[in-house]
Length: 460
Length: 180
Image (cartoon, chains in turn brown, red):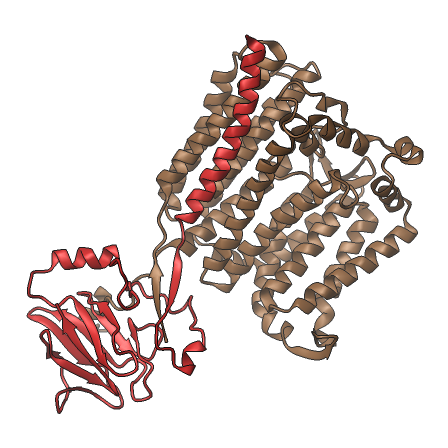
């Protein structure tokens, strides 16, 4: 015999404000530290840039009070802190490369942050209920696969450093895979809510695994073929892994069957093995991964080796912001921003950053547990998992756990499309958590309507 | 001078980062929400089946029996109500004997359904068996069309009936009474 009682969630908006002020303070401290270390003075732009950052943050917070008062109070401060630290590091690399604030990447990144936060605010205002998204399940599916394959369109797609994951329209370039991640999470959530009953029907039992029926293997095979297609045609292991991993994880959440994870890992392993046998660009990545310091690998690319050396020179506590040489690594501000941080704030600082990601993902999964509808549960867990998987792929890549791929670190890396996508993801998570934490209306308090007399209305 | 400043700043940054992480974790600890499932002491075999926690979210704070510190909601209620008014429902006999839970003016539901404030584990009780709420002239017990009826003494209730503290109300094999 048990009693079931509800513990209502606190709104936590004041906690959120306090943490936001704390986060902005840390970013300001880091910015001042960079200025002092590189140029010897506190940068004069601290007031202007800091105020700009604070205004964006406080606006977001006020919109939350207005439109999502019950949303999780921790997601926004964590995202703000990560975004701000990314800005500081990009500014620091600008200084190292001799670019000042006006022509550097940091100001553009700040502008993109503002646009991304604006988009997230707009999403919070327009999207009053995440369940509306379920109506557009198949539209989202078509859009997601379209975005994923868009870089293959001749004339539109552009090949950068071996991977064809960019599109260029005039002076603007964009990485559609980042946005595809969110749209596909919406599609998978809507699709799996409908089909999970069929997909969780038990089939034969082999080696302690309850395998699904053979005829239910269709969706996972389609997803697998698409991800292998991305791997082969766009030559990008990261997008392929992210997309397929997202599908398998959501399939697991929807059906609670471990066998799907086993099947997914098996399929991915087979795909990766075949790709390694056939394609030279995959072989090159594997060589760089396994024998980073061999002569052959260093002749191909010493980027990974330089990143590792940077982190090694940082040691436990780091060289201090502005005192290391992270700019020696190529793409120190985007793909290799994690080694840049590792060099300058050390293992201790890097672990704090990684814990922030862990906490962000945890809040997403907690939202999924609290959500009352299946679609919201699946969407929140999918979005949270995509952040986790992306962090794993990026950090695993630069630390030689897995082959290096071209994904960006959410919020930290330089790049407009990544910021836009991740802030939109945060807005969706906030919307779902607002719904999940909103107290349930008391079923025992009679609704005022039920006390009204039934009215007799003359129709004719 | 500046070297020391920079060293202090860079270590301060690490401290601030970790302080932020710890602050977030601290908020996490105080931010538990959702449903709480409290096991009761005499656990009959059927007690092992878990209840659907998400569905059975009942805003009534139902403390387990003899919780050392009463929950704030219950305490607020007692201070607000006048002296002689009953504030608790106590199960005096039946499988749940000893359980008590606070009364709420909006009414509490008693039955086998997990939505109920008092979830009866009693084969003779209905899913939504009875309701105890505050009427204009005190507490009222109302039978919600149960199969085996709600009794005060030998009388089976057909209409909402006022009860006072100490009146024994019987559903199936469970007897409850209001306590001050």
